[in-house]
Length: 124
Image (cartoon, rainbow, N blue to C red; front, side):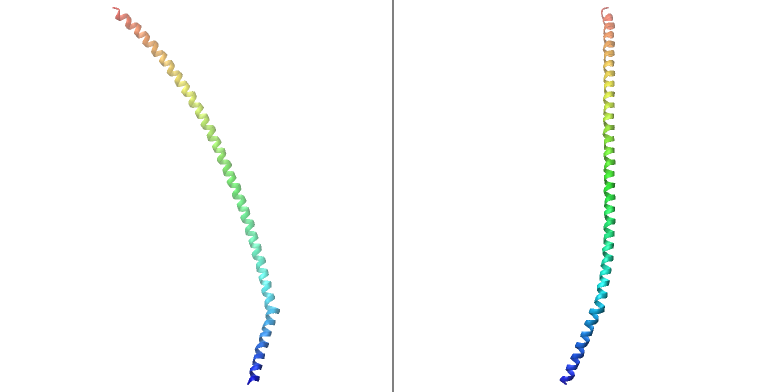
């Protein structure tokens, strides 16, 4: 009985040894190769994705710079337009002030003439 048990254990150990040998000689190298190939492929894809993202970020940065430049140009144009408008308003204000001054002089002269005319009638 002990002898059968010993033989059974020897067979189990022999099978285990064969399985370990098969694993070490065939399965493990195939797994290592598959893992290596898959890691290389994953690394290449990650590198390609990083390159794409880098290019995208560069384009985005250039687009933002272009937009900022356009905004700055529009702002400068608006400032120049505002300054021109203010200058025109000052010129118009000066014209209106001059017209008002002349109108006031004419009215003063007219009232002065009317007072003289009225003074003629009052003396009667």
